[in-house]
Length: 379
Image (cartoon, rainbow, N blue to C red; front, side):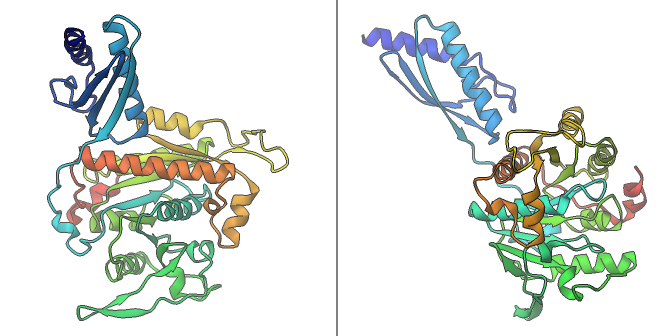
């Protein structure tokens, strides 16, 4: 029995040596990724260390290990493979983030055009992350059409100031576990905000850098539609962890979403695109919850994500409740068992996975140098 175990262990390692780590381009045995190998009868248990924390990557690794063992080793073998996520090496502190050292990730949420539900997606992602226990902040950078105060039911709140190390800092408003700042707090509810570009960008910088955010895992930044001054100011001011693009499946929205992705991919901007969210993917009437009507087209943003080789974070259905939830200041993610809430939660989970993968495999983003402004604006 002892000899059988020894031979089988060698055979298992030989089989696993045919499985490659997709990120490090070597087999998992040579890399030393296989640990805790145990053999009990015809059951084999082991752990595999990976850099990629994404759920689909873990699943593919488990399937590859099972296939390799069952193909190489004779007999019926039960395989128990557990994936361990490797601790990523400490990244060098980016001097451009010295003003906000306690914020781990800056995530821009953008859209090529208005009306695709970008702000609704941002609000629900923020609340979903907060519900999972993360420390979350949100900047409503849609200067000319701020909607977050209404979506979080705090439109009549006025942020206070407090002294922090001898400097006056704005205290974000808190709602549903999210720290929030919006230009909407500094204007009357029905007052139009009419600012030139320079005033708008200065307001954005103040909301980000002159606020007492404390420690945050994620600071989400809800950008205006399109590509313009606010976007350029952001990439010049912050080392963004990455960007999320929101689009509907409609062709005209997809054309603008493509421009949004391409802007962040420009050589002199070079912000990783964490994924695309397809909003209004289909319409489901409340009285027919199993029916899907593709009124804006079918899987257009999903296809765009595949073409541009960026992840699809989620497909969010168009239902009446998501509009009603936003209008009364209660994000749809709070209705935990509804199909739209489950879709939003899945999108937030995939976003975290992509951020973790990005931080483990891609160097920190550098801010755009001001002298590159003209080049950065050209698309």
